Length: 160
Image (cartoon, one colour):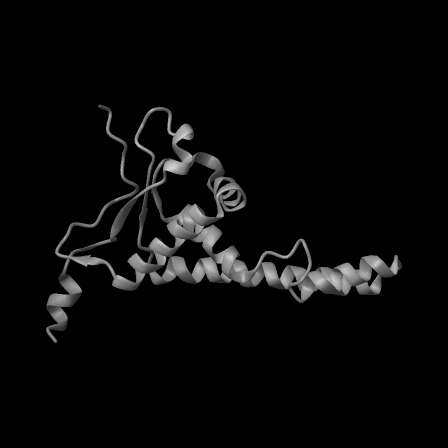
């Protein structure tokens, strides 16, 4: 392997545009296309770390619920949440996917509430949410594209 060539090569994240006709009414006449990109190992680790932190918070809430005076049903609900069978527990895979969607969306511009958009999409269009996040995983698995210039940020929408 030519390590010097590898270290000096230009790379760019892979991108994929995915038609989302289910969301057409929210694209204001534009083509209903959602573009996602691959993520770096650091971004993937951050998403996984956030999911792990969420799990830790659930465990803390469990300990608090078990040690407080309260109704037996509240304690049972806390135990269910902590072991992942309650109503308020977000499964780890979903928590990772929520972070990845807002990190890896190139367009549309999700604005300041990117996480909220990801959560809402997962609730109202779970198959679209799954399709988009599967694409992010697939692109990430392929690695960045060699021989392309690095981009300095998200793709800008055309003014025409």
